[in-house]
Figure 1 (spheres, rainbow, N blue to C red):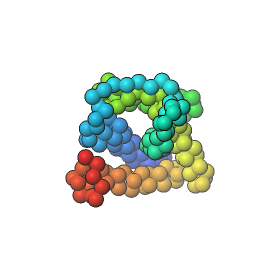
Figure 2 (figure 1 turned 135 degrees about the vertical axis):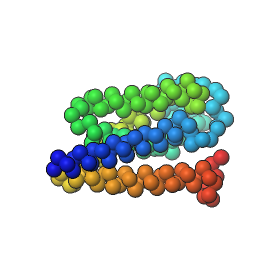
Figure 3 (figure 1 turned 180 degrees about the horizontal axis):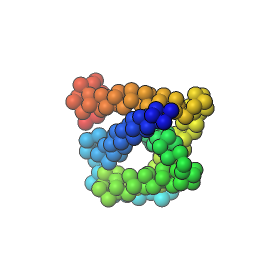
Figure 4 (figure 1 turned 90 degrees about the horizontal axis):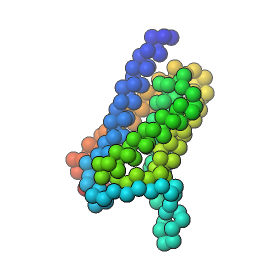
Length: 176
């Protein structure tokens, strides 16, 4: 059983590193695309500010994407940092999100937005819950971890392939 756990942890750590690199590419390098807003800096300290402004629609798509992109972080933290308390895990999600928001502001590649901090942290929490559900379904943490590793490997390969095809303009979708 120990050998399975050690091998599973090595795979999980590798997948976590790949996920984190992809996350950096998406959030900091913006998939290699220059957007018009990148030359200005802005800060928003009002959570879900757009919901309170007249004639401005809340960008639900962006909120959902912010949550979704941090769900894997929650899953990886649940696996790799089992001994951490819930508050330590929440603080970790918040600090990772804070790091990305701060870097986006400093590097002029995005706004510092409190809404993103909230939604990213919430995505991490959802990831914790998802792993607990999978762990209960398998009734074994090692089997659950191996399932996640297989699923994450397939997902990582597909995501890298999609991003590569997008970058090479080999899809009917153009993002540049």
